[in-house]
Length: 351
Image 1 (cartoon, rainbow, N blue to C red):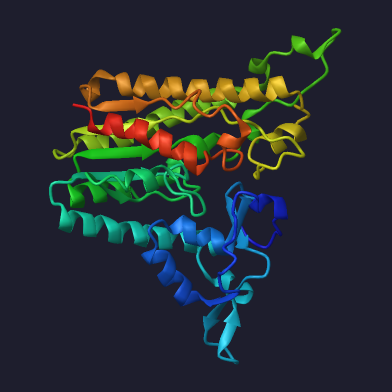
Image 2 (tube, helix red, strand yellow; image 1 turned 90 degrees about the vertical axis):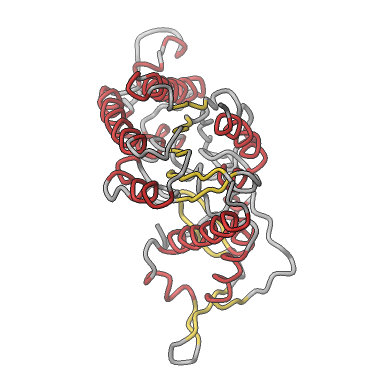
């Protein structure tokens, strides 16, 4: 997750504040992030992000910025020598800092407005992106919604199940609503095992290739597994009396980046090219097929009679149709997240 330089173009979306200090102490920066109205707005002044070798978000210092930590032989140590000591590197530290920020805001909102709708949210980087205004950044700004967030960028659905922190949070906070953003990292974060390499086919044109031929049987197996995990989460949450509704969302059709695409990230386009799947219509068709199958799974889970209509699915497909709608290859930009959050809020508040 660290150690690999990020090309300058990966920071194209993140404009630095010309007045920001070039050197800042780690604790001072942490305090700024924890007190920020939106953590990402401060973080992007100091950091860039892209796709790491392990499929996770990779965060690095912006060129020319120095973060120091008190201590060491000379009284200060440069970040470059100490961030490896932090769990998850820079990205992990930023995520934990944003979680503290959100917890503080949640407690303040509950104290100021005890009638606010209590929500527990578990999720991935569509709910918690350390350098982008995400869905929860906008939902949390709604005066009548108090969001207790466990979301952490890069988390898979499988990882959410191991400690079941979401269940303890529901027991402790007694929310009326539970939000879930999950499943995307389980296949989009590491898509290669679910693809079939391109092989030449007899015929005059490549238009004879079908996207279905490039999605492996392993993806169908994963969907069965994901359904079991989703059933477990929903069953756990709806087993608590306070929860009146569970709201989960799907993902929109990712636009695989080309080799010269300014949108950062190597989650989808890069592994497809490595498997010789280079035709744009095939790349787009494969992604559409996989997203559709996962969204159909989410719709089926929501329709399960066991949940007695308490589970709602918010469909985002077809919302982000242009490159500039995306922050990077697989995350909506802030403007689009604001629109998607408004759509999600309607479902949260619906009778």
